[in-house]
Image 1 (cartoon, rainbow, N blue to C red):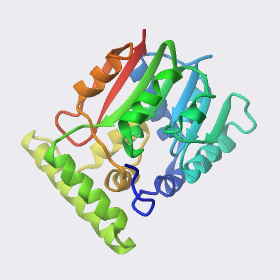
Image 2 (cartoon, helix red, strand yellow):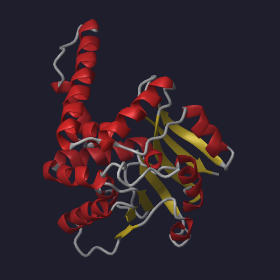
Image 3 (tube, rainbow, N blue to C red):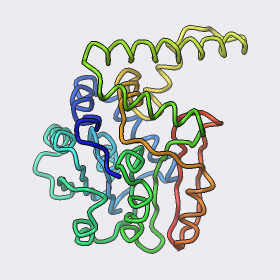
Image 4 (cartoon, one colour):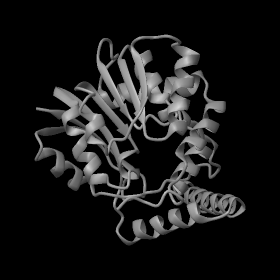
Length: 272
């Protein structure tokens, strides 16, 4: 069932604010994450479909690596963010196209064709119909093409609790949302500090924050907002995603799991 519009998190507003902190270091981090997970040095001449482009950072990273990029998002502000990055770095470039569209709209998807790389990081579980979205991306991957997705890890009762937190966040007033963000951030950072102490490490988070920036080029604060607010929200166990795509002719070639946490498991499949 689709989430009520009033409850749906406004992803575009968060990513629009993220663009104010985007710099070369973050862009390089995004490029590195693509190269590492796809196991390539570049994407020269490859067609790259970014489903749910969000801030546009990874569309930009793929284009800088040489890909021919098509980006789409169902959030008009996310589309605007992606267009802004194109304006900044690839103005009037014919090899990067951007549209507004939904991964749940099979009529829209049917005209997009097939791609060497289909990328959708942290998106399909926010559509309100995750399994339909996972199904709909199958025809978009060409033979021997790669599908790179990330899906929230299923933690059973904890995931159900987290879903209720997200729903409450989106129904709350702005002051209450800020308070919730600060409380969740404090709990997460306190837990992480205790773990670092147990491992004999410096409990302060600054090294971890720097590594996060380098890892995918993201921002701790904007990721926190997305993490707490991101709704609709669905989850899956790694083996469920693996079996789903195996039955549809895909082979798993890369997997990063989150060790029992609420984070996203990352998958790279190749279509046989």
